[in-house]
Length: 430
Image 1 (cartoon, rainbow, N blue to C red):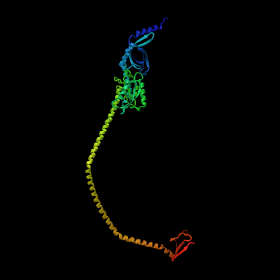
Image 2 (image 1 turned 30 degrees about the vertical axis):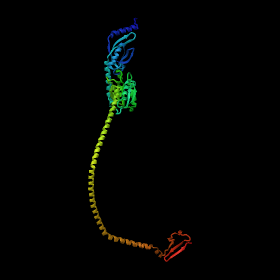
Image 3 (image 1 turned 90 degrees about the vertical axis):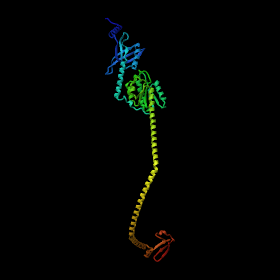
Image 4 (image 1 turned 180 degrees about the horizontal axis):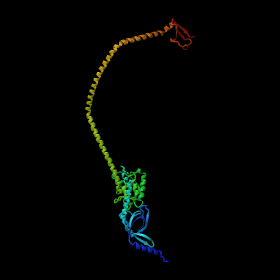
């Protein structure tokens, strides 16, 4: 039986592939895995079913050092993004089969415009979802507090932009004081999204301690902007209870984080300037209101002073008029009193005349009544006269000139008098 060695079989496969796939092909795929080694780039490409988001095709691809050294910076320059996992790309590949290493696609070129279009589509999809959820402009609707001085900053602790932000606030020409609290985060490379969301969660737990949040990066590679274009981060910022100011430090493109934030500025320094200008505007408004209040008070005082002066000038005239009115009133009252007095005297005179006519009969009747009562009293008095009682046979016993009514009032040897009709009997108590 004729047989082949493995090398011969693989060589036959290589020749077949070289003959059957002699040219380069542009292939659309998603980067599932990616690593660089010794200047070469090794990728795992996949295609997913759009309905179920599951892989339906997979292939390995390589980009050798010479090609990768030119393709990588070109892609990053055109797209502003690092080539990373999860990104859709359009690459030119050629088929290669090696007897010892097997089959792989060799990347010879990459089209950054395709990835730009895909990223744009993804950005538009995120924006569409945010608007459908009704949160796209939610953070913009929050009012920036009048005295925005307690600032929560999300940034890298070592970032030059953070230092510029602090310096700008501390050296403001108005002498305003700001309290800045830093929440250190990763602002470049992988992990931007999770790091910022974690910082937002910490701030949200104590949001009453802050007036606003500033997310600042202060420069960095354009390719690191992809971390600010995620749905989860945008939803967190859009729904945050405090105004969020972004100063990512990239003025060429606007990321989704900028779109949903309360205010977007170009740099950390511009964010600090925004806060200073806002506080200065409030300060000027207060000064303006104070000046208006002082002017209003001055006008009121001047008006009242003039009014008082007019009243003062009118007092003599008013006093004269009041005096004349009171004199006239007194005259009227005097006249009324005179009439009332004359009428009262006339009335009393008539009453006195009537009483004079009624007095003799009344006096005579009163005297008769009194005389009758006196006679009755005389009769009663005569009946009560002790002499009358003595004449009737009664006697009165006296002790020391007082009537004796109780035997206990006298003692042995006391002298008592007994008065009778015809005389007095003196007795000694034995």
